[in-house]
Image (cartoon, rainbow, N blue to C red; front, side, top):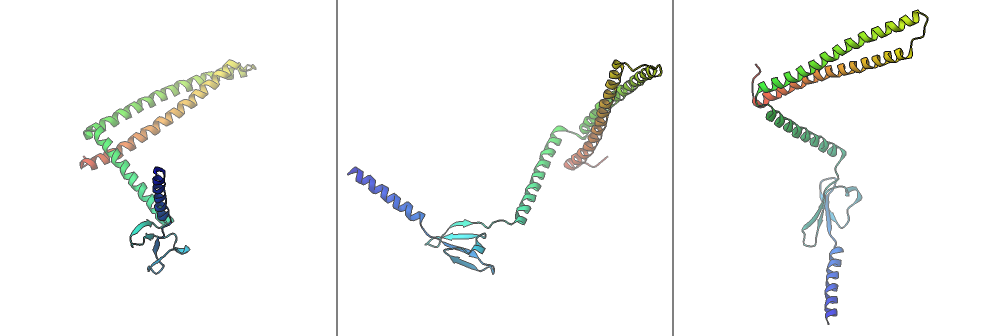
Length: 204
């Protein structure tokens, strides 16, 4: 008796699921003249448009949104990027205001950066002068060997190559530091302008 009861329940549930699965809906869409049309099947030319599924009670039970055009997708991408830029600007503004309490703090920070960079540039220039002087002496020694009709000793050639390599490294380092200094100045100018905008302070 219990088995028959359970079987009846399972059969009842199966019929409900089967009925809902195979339930047919009326589908409605707008045609090319913006006139609403409804049918059990949607013509292929309207398959990508907004479609409403309506049950037997006349209730909209499902809506399929129209497929977005390339222009719409591109517009959404631009808007997303625009919002991301705004969000990043707000983040940068917050950092700027939290880092520098006053405009004077901004100037002091920039001066420290420039001073440190100028110090590194000065050291690099000094190293270059020493290296160029060393290279000049080594090349004179090599020239003396050649004038005497002798081959330039390999250790001397190795030293010359080593000094030349060091000179190139120092020149690259010097170029990098000068670029860094220009970047600091550019960033400071931009930060100062933005800081004054946020604080609504007029330039001195």
